Image (tube, rainbow, N blue to C red; front, top):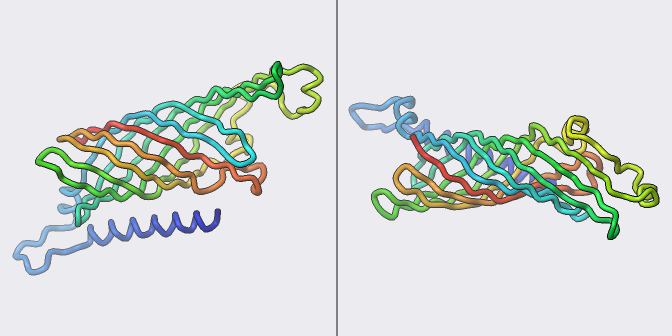
Length: 238
């Protein structure tokens, strides 16, 4: 886990170095030198983005929890050279899971979970023009997922005998059982994103996968619990 986290930090620093090198470049030898402010303004592209996301929480000692939901936000893209660009922004996600854990044929526990989070991408894009208005996009880089709230309702359907084997599993309501506030999982989830898409005029359709780097398990650091997932988005630049 430490190696993956260090690798993510190194890639993040390289991304910022690329952006800094581009925005500080001066066109020497010209009779008129643009200011950094003017050049960076003309090289920025702002977009609004909306789409679906399907994260999952998984680990070798855990049953996988699948979420479904959507996300919305805004991004800004800075042009670099050699068809590269740097993209960042903020995207709010709301996802829901309705998981049933079976213990016997007649004994089970249902977990209903809502998850609110913010994604901050720090990715490098490669843009390949196929015509005047059409281009392909490939992207990769770090993504910082920040958990805002994760309320969970627990409904126990067990016989008294079965409950004796699992005394810690009890009925809980959303308002009393936020997984972040109860220190069950970490709010910060470092991820690596890999994906691609297509742009036509001012519209983009793209998709990718966020690979979880660090464990979000706060109860037992020896048991890894990661969060990863797919996403598909439509974006409009203005």
